[in-house]
Length: 228
Ligand code: ZN
Image 1 (cartoon, helix red, strand yellow):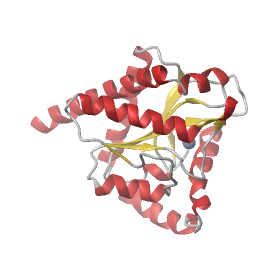
Image 2 (cartoon, rainbow, N blue to C red; image 1 turned 135 degrees about the vertical axis):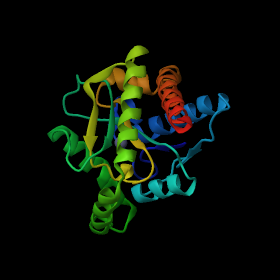
Image 3 (cartoon, rainbow, N blue to C red; image 1 turned 60 degrees about the horizontal axis):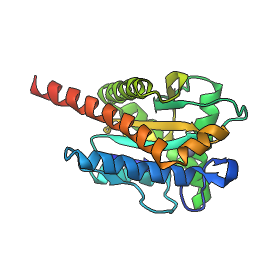
Image 4 (cartoon, rainbow, N blue to C red; image 1 turned 90 degrees about the horizontal axis):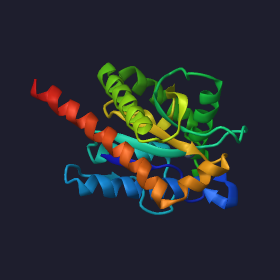
C-alpha cells in the first residue's frame, strides 16, 4: 500500500484557521494510517513523503508503481468559500467531474505541479489521456469498490461525511491505469471546527481507523476473489 500525503514543501495546500496547513495535516494522517496498518502485520506500507518536501503529482504515481502498490491512497483536506461546509469525501478517477465544485477542486489540486518549476501540464495532458484510455475497467471498478467501502466505514464510525461522499474527478494523482487509487479529502480546512479536529492526533487516529477498516474489507474481498 502506498499512502500519499498531499502537498508539501513550498506547496502548503489549503490553509485553515490558526495557520493550520493542509500539508502538515496530510503528513500526520499518513503516518498514523501507516502505523495502524503496519501494526496489523498484514501490510507493507510506504509513504510518498515522510517529511515536509515538495513532490510532483506525476512522481507520486511513479512512487506507487516503483513499490508495486496494490492500492494507492492520497490524503488531502479540502477548502471552500462556504465555511459552514464540513465532512469527508472520496474521489476516484473520471474524465468528467461530478459537478462544478469537484471540477474546481481537481483543477486546484492538479495546479500544484506548476509550483515545482517546469510546467508539465501540457505533456501531462497527453500522457494522461493515453493512460485514461488504457485504464482497465477492472482498476476503475476496484477503486470505486474501495471508495464505497471506506465511505461505509467512515459513516459507521461517526465521521462526518459529505452528501454524495463518493465523487469523480480527473485528479492527476489518480491516473495510474493499473493501481486502484483513491483520493480522500478528510474534511475541510475552511471549516474551523474541522480544521481543529484534523490537527488533533485523536481525531486523525479515528479517521485512520476507519480508513484501515475500509482497507481491511477491501483486501478481504480481493483475496476471496483471487481464491475463486
Ligand atoms: Zn489537497
